Amino acid sequence: MFGCRYTKPGDEDESFFETENRLTIFKKGGNMVKRGIVFGLMLVAVVWAQNADSLIDHAIELYETRHLERANLGQSASILEGIIENDPKNVRALYELSKVCYLLGDEAEEKDAKLKLFYRGRDYGESAIELDDESPDAHFWYMVNVGRVGQTKGVLNSLVLVPTVREEIETVLELDPEHIGALDARAMLYYELPGLLGGNLNKSIEALNTGIALDSNYTLLYVDMAKVYMKKKDYEQARQYLNRALEITIPTYEADHVLDDKPEALELLEEIKDR
Image 1: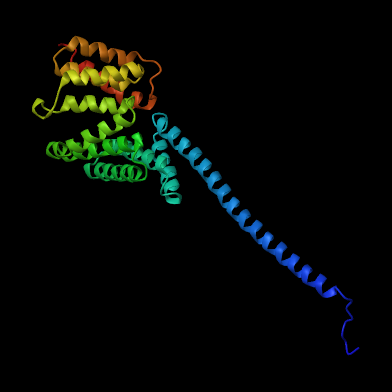
Image 2: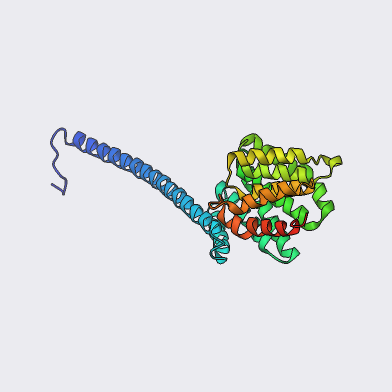
């Protein structure tokens, strides 16, 4: 009557519970949606991290084959820059790009171009250290670029930066006592410094021998050992190490061997051939 629906006793309660059930289902559904979104975001993060690692691996492959195709180095830099643009806190991408800046800087011919690249490499390395102070490679490539800045700007600047370079080398070796790059850097610091500032050729030899014991195919170590013996005027020993560098058929870093170590070994052999 008058448009009212007749309800039996208990209908009101059933309606109430139906409403409550709907609200409960809605809340549960909302929570499930939230959990789904969180899971989705986590999945995206995992996938991105995996993709980023794959891209970094590819960038490394490119710079390690730069002796086969010169453009590979620039492509490597572009990939790493893209990763950092999307993920500024990717420590691995930061220190790998620091390394690539060093390699590009060494290739550059003009002083200003070199410095620009070494400064960028230094900054990328520093950013990596700020994010992970216990990363040996972050400290190492920061140190290498700092050292290159000093060398490029001149002797006085190099001397000013020696304390920073020395501190970073020791930090790397504290974090990773078998870091061969840092062992070579320690050796060459002892080689380059005058005695009054801590230079010591015997300590150079000690550090290089440690490196060779760890990796006998690391050709740079033999070239640097030859330089030490040349400074000691022991040319026969120098020749032996240079020839050893040339005899290695499977160098640890083939691009470095082809582009740098082998040409330098041949040049040094020519320099001492009558001594």
